Structures are given as structure tokens and as C-alpha cells.
Length: 116
Image (cartoon, rainbow, N blue to C red; front, side, top):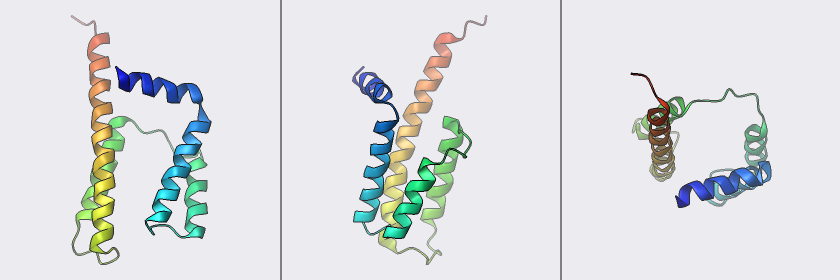
């Protein structure tokens, strides 16, 4: 129940809250040395653009799984082992959140399905 209350709070605050969250993520990536100043501006701008289609939870989860597979490739010498570990850890957290969302979506569908 606490999760739902917290979720409603963020919805009530609107886009300002999302913008703050985006800035926190960008600052965190920059602090880890994963973004330079020019990249930081580009990433923040790409997050703000609305030209990307909205994904379903299942599509988002599939994309994260593909990214996890990419980050697990040992033959990729573009990223150091430490960078791959950091990326995988962040993606695993995201995947867990998406699985929770998918479970909630299924529960919602089950409670509204009145077919006999």
C-alpha cells in the first residue's frame, strides 16, 4: 500500500518531479565518470524529447533483457569489466522494477476480466 501512495505522490507533483529525477540520474552517471559534460547535455536533451513511442511494460522488459545480454558479452572490449558490472547492476535493478510493474499489470487485468 505504501508503494501506491508514493506512486500517487509523484503523479500529483507532475513533470517537475520527473525532470528532477532525470537530473539526479544524469548527475549520478556523471559522478561515476560515465558521462562527460557534453554527453550530459545531450543525454538530458534526449530524455526530454517526446519523439519516442511509448513502450508497454513487456516491451520495456524485453529491451532491458537485450541490454543485459549486451553488457554480459565478454568479447566486447569497448567497456571495461567495471563498467560492464555497473551497467549490469543498474539494468538488473530496472528489470526488477519492470517485473513488479508487469505483475501489477497482470493483477489489474485479472481483476477487471469478467469473461465467463
